[in-house]
Length: 410
Image 1: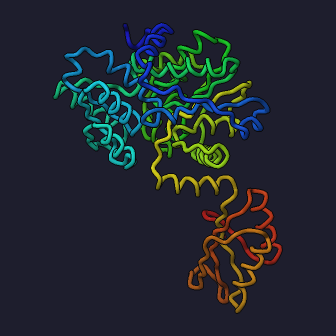
Image 2 (image 1 turned 30 degrees about the vertical axis):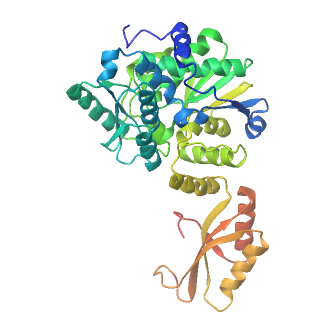
């Protein structure tokens, strides 16, 4: 097979499914009422975050390792990942009694590191990005003889990931739109192979985080393009360059690639947690983020793939707060008023009358920007949404207070 040009086939995906029988879970699809309301039609979530090891990665990793020769498996395998591929490789290698070494970025979430070790892999923290970890893993493979298991850019990996689409079509046979997150492109490449072979009428949409979107410029250029820098809360899809194999699939088979902001992702995570009772990592929620943000026209029934659920609890706390702020339910602002007895009590009373809950308050008298006899109060409050926040700010300004927000000019 010429990796840069030949595409994986439906037969490859179906063969991968046979290999995975009894190894992976058939993850459920669940209806999503908020998405149904947004799209005015049926909307479903493919809950791949409930897969073994917490993401779709076990599918491709197992197929790749299972197709190695006994001699190759005896040399061990090596991989690089921000966390999900790491866990998939570690679990798959353990199931086949193969030693595994995984290179992860220095800033990889601690739960992902611990889980990877728990599945039996030896973990090495190298580099600040997945790309740097990939380079280190390839050097290790050349020096040690271990077989490098690429996180996305290999036909066996793509075939394994494509088995998700076979399940999805059986679970939602009338689907018209499928939305899938993209990092390096392994998942959407595999999904595209199966979907376009079996249901070419289905619209397949890929979603990248705006801060790490290598596919749009690559598709525009006609070849993979490396981003000079990239940053996003969705660490699982923070990949600086599409793979050659995955790019060939995406460019030929995927209908559209769109981007979402970190704020969009935060809102999606909050909705999934609050309304769907689903704990999903940022990379796993970008499909839902795209549907909620309305960045692409959709024909229903629609299915968004929740690709992973391995989220650091500390990040979850920050994302919940960020999501509340993005949804207008957590409001941080500063009020300036005359410094006289009773002013703080009056201000807090107005906020209480407005139905908001004060989370934090800081009284400042000594800022050099303040005029003589003026005081500044920094507040964080919980509200019931953007409309409630607007009413609260209007009420404070009507009462004579100067209200400003972080980053705005006084």
